[in-house]
Image (cartoon, rainbow, N blue to C red; front, side, top):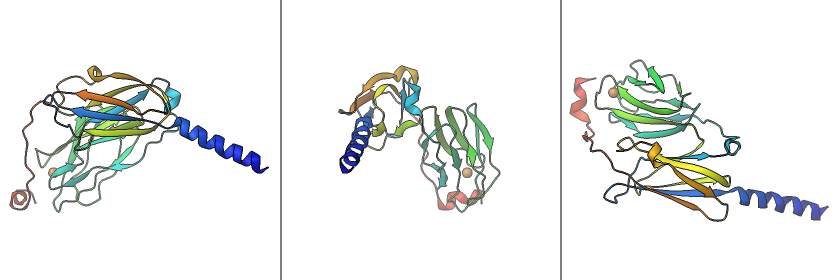
Length: 217
Ligand SMILES: [Cu+2]
């Protein structure tokens, strides 16, 4: 009996260990500098490897008249809340084909959550503060991550198998499709995916607070 139990436990452990694989991603710009806020998408060639995925709720805040986070990747079907942590009102909208919506002018946590049911990039704006811009990347795959300040991201708990991986950044100077790489993922060795992408220059609008907000109470 005990022997059976041990056999079952060890086989469960073995399966779990055999399943867990990971991809370590690194994104740099044309000068070799780390690129933060790049979304990494990992798409299993065998769609069965994406079963059991669920679409969790998430939030995009508004702080100091900026969307926080600036880039938010989510799994298609996820719901996002848009709390407003500023003491002024915002009016969040998107005209993007992947999701057109407009929240009424609101403060606090009054805005109803929004469901994102179509993959693609959703550009967020605010009708009151023209410079406010943010991005929701609605991913068709449940396996994704976003690079941090070091340009790195880890996607783990992946079933071993074949994948295509790609990256997206709001200022990328090329198409997302052109970044596609193929990876055969084994359980034993983490795979590494690296990109060097050019970033288009952007006009950086500094965070404003205090007096600047007086025009739009
Ligand atoms: Cu606003």
